[in-house]
Image 1 (tube, rainbow, N blue to C red):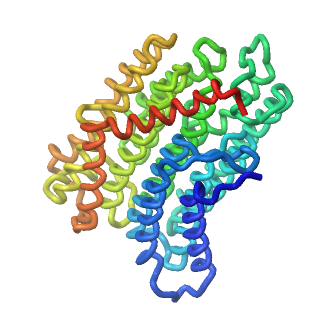
Image 2 (image 1 turned 90 degrees about the vertical axis):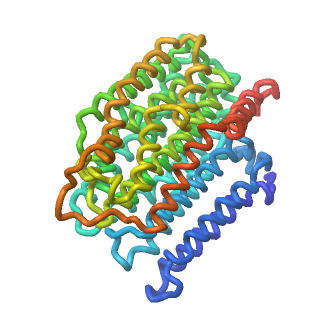
Image 3 (image 1 turned 60 degrees about the horizontal axis):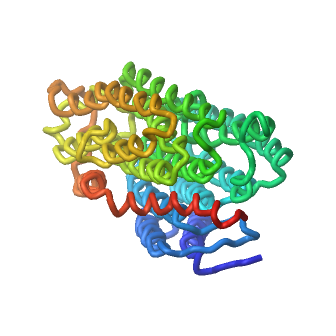
Length: 482
């Protein structure tokens, strides 16, 4: 077994962080310092360690675990997402005092599973890492004080997740039976035409179902709005962003099997078109802010498919870049939702009325987040969609690119309604607490809004990183496989 300790430094640091959280969750509740005092520093250090891992490479554990540019890109994104969600959850009003250490421990275990998922290059390893990331989520979602909706959301996520997991495992057995290998590098050299390998195509389709469930791609999206609505605002911020990163990195790795014109590629393209259309049309009718963001994520899952079906390194790189944009844009909007709902309630659109007077920094940051989700320049969302469109055009799915453009036009209506309520509506609802206008709330919103703008204006460093990551996956072909 080949083993490179230096290549595993980000994972090992994160594992130690999770172990400390586990010990504190098992220990005396009176331990000092409280977990909220030190976990933001630990999460920030984990993000720094993930950045220092840039450039590390190696294949280990009998070649099922690969540290490369693609894994490092997503590990940095996942570590950043964990840092922001930990900061966001540090002021969570709907979490009982005795459960705080357990809550962070479960968040940590889920994130550790996602970091392992980023480096998994063999289907059984992918499946196990996905399960490690998922089990913690089943316990986190119901943690919302005295909320029947949270319990309902937790049950739905468990039941739907179990079905999606079973389908993925069933599909894995088909792939093993027909292709006789589970290594992605070897599967690249196999035929994925339905005429040649019908069992393998069916198996891969079923295996991808597990990833589509995490990504909330139509028609595997039905849990998404209900879980967002039922979970606490801070938990919804994690569920809406982090598991999606794990699904996207696996789909990027499996995209090397997809060539334009194959039956399975066309199925994914059709699901992408249906997902973006269904998500946007459903979001038009929503007044609950988290349900609106839930259907929005269904639409964004469809956008990511545009890059994956192109069959090129540029397309995979564009999908990875858009995944990062999706993470930062949604963390920004959920940060503002959590700061406006200081009592932990679910927000309606009317709750944003007059926000520019009560909390101008939050209102301005919300505007940037809404413009980015629409895809207006000069935000990161615009550059992400631009890269997806240019990478996919003239690769056999021009109709899908046109569908993306039309759906972006539909999305303008409900995203800009966030802006309209925050800046033009004056009649604020009565008997609700004022938004959090502290330096903590403003600094977090400002940091995320700045990231959305800066990467939108200067996208080259991150996009070149993503393109290099995509090229590294396709480079396996010339290397002769596993």
